[in-house]
Image 1 (cartoon, rainbow, N blue to C red):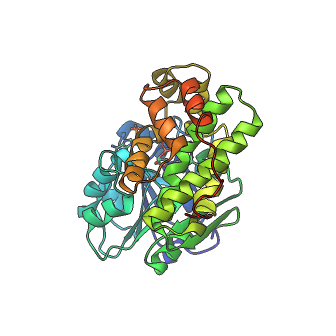
Image 2 (image 1 turned 180 degrees about the vertical axis):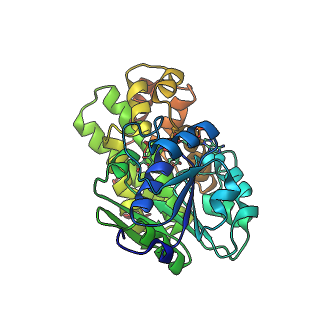
Image 3 (image 1 turned 60 degrees about the vertical axis):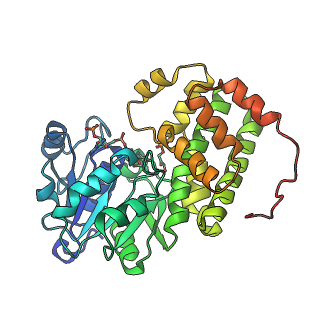
Length: 345
Ligand SMILES: NC(=O)C1=CN([C@@H]2O[C@H](COP(=O)(O)OP(=O)(O)OC[C@H]3O[C@@H](n4cnc5c(N)ncnc54)[C@H](OP(=O)(O)O)[C@@H]3O)[C@@H](O)[C@H]2O)C=CC1
Ligand SMILES: O=C(CO)COP(=O)(O)O
């Protein structure tokens, strides 16, 4: 908390100077932790360090003067007690490999990245286990949290899941503060699945809204989307309650309904007839669903689960069908019971 002696609090290195990494670094620095933000763009990072503003990703928002920013990974990690990785999923494995030789032996590694390893479909904790080896405490930070609102100090709740409860608590303690509630859990599988899948489902809801299908369609899409999350989660062995909480339902509702969501905005643009290339260029930030849709379907196929909405999103993102054809595909499915295999079957 702001009144604590910074020397008594864990020092934290945040890797990734985009909107979410910057917002989390600012939050943690405001709580009194010695915090260093690392970014790959030397010029941008020098400007953040000098002006206390991330002009590209969070323009107009004042960052705490105590937040240091650097391009030197060794410098960022040298005296840290905890590493928080906040790069896009396509850069996750590479960033872990870069940080590994610099990580102080006692420092656990958490991440706020949402998605899977592109190409392999591996969960990010599987990647972290492989790259860092056994014995390094790991945790995932996830939940309904737009970077801009966190950076502005607006109230937010999210959750930290890890197999090592002490480490999950350490991460949650750094995030928790006067306007920020950080909960904990031990279900990395469910937490990572929720954070990844909600981005794909936000595209679906965005498409429906872009096509002006109405509020009924939006609510139906969100609810059947939650059903897809629950079914895949049950198959992979995640806990149902994780998906009914901040990591699932909470983030699904935020991303499907909030226009700050880049994944929703991609869907809106596609639903209005814009091309994916133009939409992505206009958004100008990472849109995780583009890679995640493939990996969700890969996971679903592996477990023999049918996910009609996610599958339609994947096909639209690949240009295999139009949004109108995707809608027709969903509406023409056979009628069936709402829960043929029970609530979490
Ligand atoms: N923004 C949000 O509200 C939230 C985002 N997330 C998740 O956080 C993750 C990061 O997203 P976000 O910060 O929003 O994305 P942004 O698009 O805002 O920023 C991406 C950042 O990652 C950097 N980057 C890209 N590739 C690499 C790489 N190979 N090595 C190192 N850095 C790289 C970019 O650097 P450069 O500028 O040089 O390209 C940029 O600083 C995503 O998985 C996202 O889903 C989770 C919750 C909320
Ligand atoms: O993960 C997020 C909110 O929790 C941010 O969503 P987008 O990546 O769609 O902007």
